[in-house]
Amino acid sequence: MAEYILPLEKLIEQFRHLPGIGQKTAVRLAFAVLDFTDDEANAFANAIRGAKENVKTCSICQNISDGELCPVCADENRDRSVICVVEDAKAVMSIEKVREYTGVYHVLHGSISPMAGIGPDKLRIPELLSRLTADVREIIIATNPTVEGEATAMYLTKLIKPLGIKVSRLAYGIPVGGDLEYADEVTLMRALEGRRLM
Amino acid sequence: MAEYILPLEKLIEQFRHLPGIGQKTAVRLAFAVLDFTDDEANAFANAIRGAKENVKTCSICQNISDGELCPVCADENRDRSVICVVEDAKAVMSIEKVREYTGVYHVLHGSISPMAGIGPDKLRIPELLSRLTADVREIIIATNPTVEGEATAMYLTKLIKPLGIKVSRLAYGIPVGGDLEYADEVTLMRALEGRRLM
Image (cartoon, rainbow over all chains, first blue to last red; front, side, top):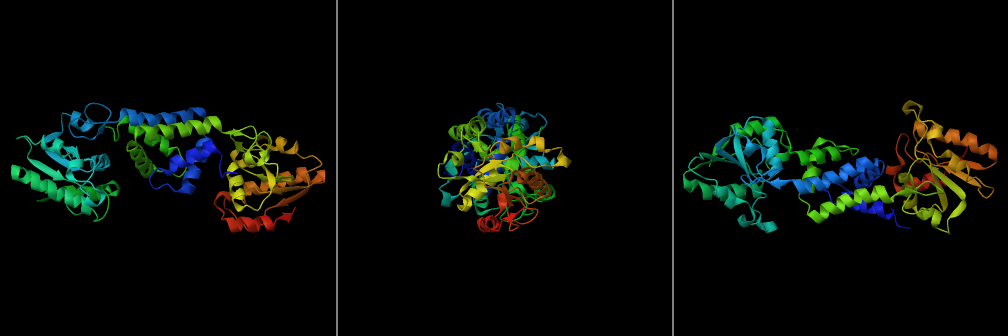
């Protein structure tokens, strides 16, 4: 006999596609779904489809959004003269949690990684450049403190600094080799405060 | 602004319903789903609905099944004179992995737990008793080595032993206080071999 009956095997397989979920965890999660009521299972399935269908990217900053503009770009009180450039939407969430930053964002959707075949052309850099009007006085580069994040920061600096716009980088309060998603809020606040000119 | 946009918040909430998934992991998994293609997201959602809709219980042993009979009960080569009684379908999977047991199963769907208000009437015990024909020579009780599993084993022994059927219990090769789902295969094999009469 197969180890699991087919509908269960399929669900285990789906959970295994998720990052950080191994076989044992996938089995545990799949069995948990079997214990759901029909309504709970439908709600779960709908949430997955809903997230894919209703999450778009903001037409200004490229952050994920459920409307034409993301909540930050739609907020009239945010300072549009400072743009914080991040790799992904998770980094926006992390910085928003600090409740210290009042500027806006730009989400690159990745970082330059020659090893993975990701060049600058794969990132939302043209969309960033088109935002660099005379009103913009500072670009804070908040890419991850990794080789790829650093390479991206260097690339953007070379592009933007000649335009006469101040370019800064998050201070190395963030642990080197880490990921913005897991930085605690105090560390992130220090990193914002101690940002250095490039 | 809300911490996350609504469709994402809903999905994070759904992941948090799963056992052992905290806020950080739920956020990570939800973002992973956003990176899925539409086809991948649909496959995931369908697997959840499919598992709920297509997984039924076997009419004989009450194990989960995608048909009228589970693969074990449908297998003509299994020895119907030995019934291994387990708490849940996960335990069946664990014992099947040992590839040593040739009898059939009975899944109780729980264990007696006065603290949680689960009495013998909530378990599939009538279905077990109806299977105790003259052909049955042994009941192996393989409930979890917990207080509830032990209470269930004692209860079943008192019911079945007077009928003149041999009742045995898995040997304490399985770690006390543990869960069958996490026992390794050698430990489970020892436990099967060393089962003691009750």
